[in-house]
Image 1 (cartoon, rainbow, N blue to C red):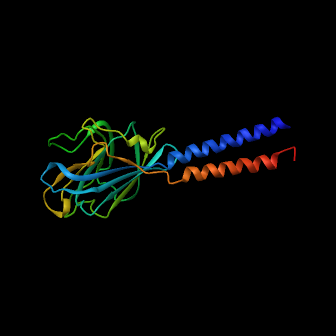
Image 2: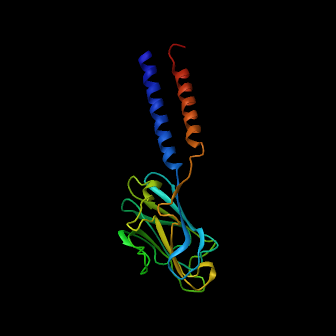
Image 3: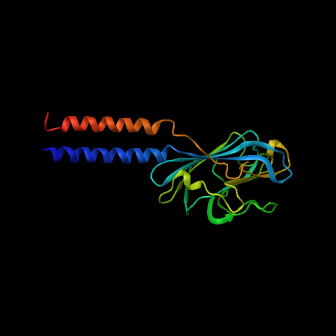
Length: 220
């Protein structure tokens, strides 16, 4: 009788542990801000979060990337970042890049310029025809990125040039001098705090274990 109760408690604790682990992964997005002073080109300095890349867990093996263009980002040509494994892409909503999403280990970067900004793994390639191009201030692109074991932290990878990501903006601040920008501080990604979700789920799991033990206790 007591052995049966212990088995039930052990199973409940196991389920609670898995729920907490899953919630911990999904509750820790990773964010890269692109902007600041141009590393190459004649464009002006822009807000450090002119392009925001937000990576959030969207299910097992899938991370949802939301790209947001801030007020200073007009006529965005392309965006580059890193990931620690080969990935595939599925467009979700917003602006669908004219030339798509591509993965190639250390294979991408804005053309030319010093210092070199090559060596990124992922390229998001927008069209630039028209006055403001395809992607500009106030717009978003949402895409699901998938690979076995992929989590938001998989994108916390520095290229050989020391940056997490970069972008080529053709009309920063609406002017005609283009610039190539990176995360303002090399390695300057940020992790978003859990916000108490894990603790709340832990409490719920303990309550679940207690309820199960009371209802299934053969000694009552």
